[in-house]
Length: 100
Image 1 (tube, rainbow, N blue to C red):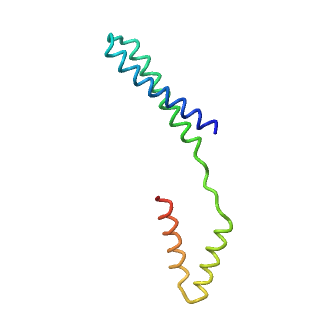
Image 2 (cartoon, rainbow, N blue to C red):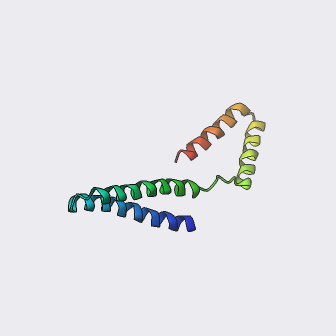
Image 3 (tube, one colour):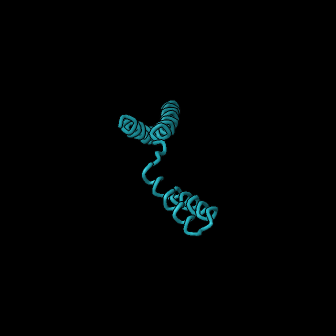
């Protein structure tokens, strides 16, 4: 929650830095103000990248779902299906789901 609020605040500063560069450039062509706003924007862009990376949730495994999938694989294999093909199908399904 805190990282989300920080990301919002940093994003607002980022947008303000871009606006500051435009205004300082158009208003009186003040190079010092343009460079200052540019540096602020550059630092906030790095902060946004860091906060976005830090806010990622690690993948969790649903043990009940994993048990049900393994039970279904076992059932298919005991019913005569090729275990290698069934497990390959499950891997492809996981890759398909992660691609969304």
